Image (cartoon, rainbow, N blue to C red; front, side, top):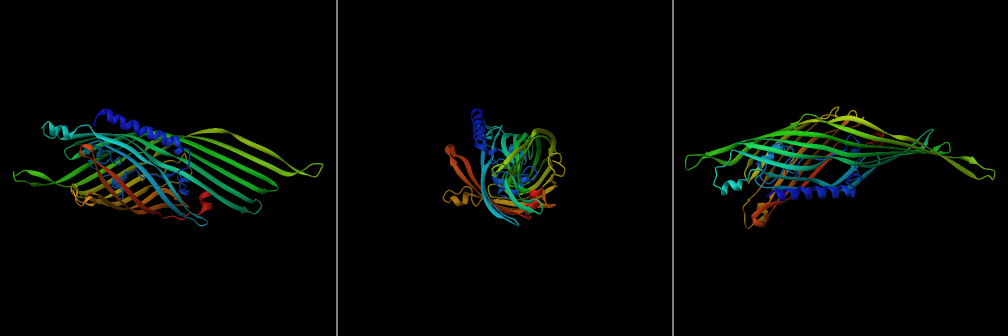
Length: 442
């Protein structure tokens, strides 16, 4: 693909990104999740749809047609330009001790483009000997966390009476990455260099309606802007099975085992918070000469204060292995670990713990060259996972487990170019009990 077309894709991506933000994606809640009140919010899976549909196989996943930012070494395997746009739709059902509710939400999943910097087609046309190394590059934008909740609880305490707590949160954080990778023989190495940014707004209302004939409102808001440069690196190695051909030469059979490793040390970020507090009280106990009741109002406003905190995104490591037969099947396993403990201790009082995820999954293609049965050319994907979330509630670490499945629908474009429409589904459960007053108390 020409440089002009690549630039056009990048411009289109950022135009779409700007339109998405302009519609309020940073300023209006996209979800209503009580968990997102903790830490930086609900985490967004960094796996793109193909590897995510296999339970999460980013460490060892590479493909000629798909992108993978979990392990940037995968960009070296691209044979043509790949452009991916992901859209997420989520249904959640939350069961608590005092209230149950469900919610539909949706948002932009990711934007990414990748391309080879050495064109294999030109090598074939020029009748050159295949090169021992390949080079790939890409750009991507991926949400990292999403905050969205609207919680309310009514209490009655002796001596205070009825009072209401309401908590509202919105916003999120994002990663923008520049990926580079090089492949030499059966080894590939890559790095993501990027920037982490976002805005999170949290509001708190407390209403006391029975304090000796007075009516009090407390309003508190905390708006935080986060930012910092980030990086992660990765490597992949293919053990290629070979056999003797009729010329007594060792040639690949199309079967290989891929070993993948990616991760990073902790990435430092800055967090600038602006806090504002207002108290309004209304007194109803006054009576004038005619006997009619009147009231007086008093407002106490604390000036906005800016607080600068330092934090860090955790050191992470992803390790996986995948057995695959070209254009036939993939099956693998992955373990991921993130050292979240003390990462955001200056920003929040929430206690974060180290997290780990284990996943198993694969892909199957019945017959990728079938000309009379489209169903045989579809890529069928499946997986299972178990995940320890770094957030805790009532000193119990959140745990999530589930199953995934998906499909890659091939589409033939003009000039016989191959593209895919991918559908992925995740069905999971957070194994933790919500107690509303405990969550509000945080």
